[in-house]
Image (cartoon, rainbow, N blue to C red; front, top):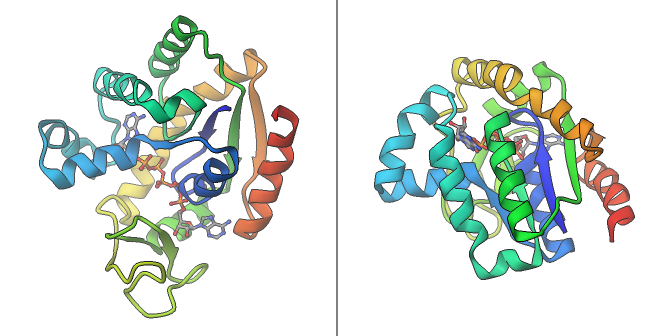
Length: 216
Ligand code: AP5
């Protein structure tokens, strides 16, 4: 399957993506995770992206499009993919459309996760991520058994640099102005499906799986 997860920062894309990818047997491709790995490793790409990410602004389209093209050439993407955080602008969506047309690999569905703004701010300011395995926690909604330690690998839980309230508010504004137009882009192509993303993680996953069953 070829799936896009669309939704504002904090909608739960990364949280839901893990199980969707596992159930469908496809790689979870998060452009945010790829960029953060590059920042951590101090690569040229990471150095170029860091300033944009820390401010909550988007990394330039040409950087992202090249990065995604390379990722789709890897072997595991032959089975399909689940994009999380990509595309984020109309030029990115158009570039993906061209790339997939060349490869004769059309998209199956775009899932839009809908969450109100106040919930997003609560989710992001309480998010903690394992520095070892990347598992996502929340201080209130999904706390670890031991404070500051990952339940799965014992790694240290860290807060993302862009999860402070002022940066979160900018990310939401960037989403509204630059990413929301994609909802119409995919609606016009008959690919958009809405998912109510408030409620337990498991409930939201069940809503997603109910939609995906139509495509298997
Ligand atoms: P990216 O990493 O893509 O961040 P984002 O889209 O802002 O999304 P988040 O990862 O913040 O949220 P999420 O929806 O995954 O929520 P999560 O599941 O973690 O991008 C970061 C930056 O990289 C961008 O600002 C930009 O600079 C750059 N970038 C990335 N892609 C780019 C692109 N294509 N073009 C240009 N620039 C790009 O959940 C959040 C919290 O809520 C967690 O604590 C979780 O435990 C909790 N939670 C989840 N679900 C629930 C639930 N149902 N109930 C209660 N709590 C929940």
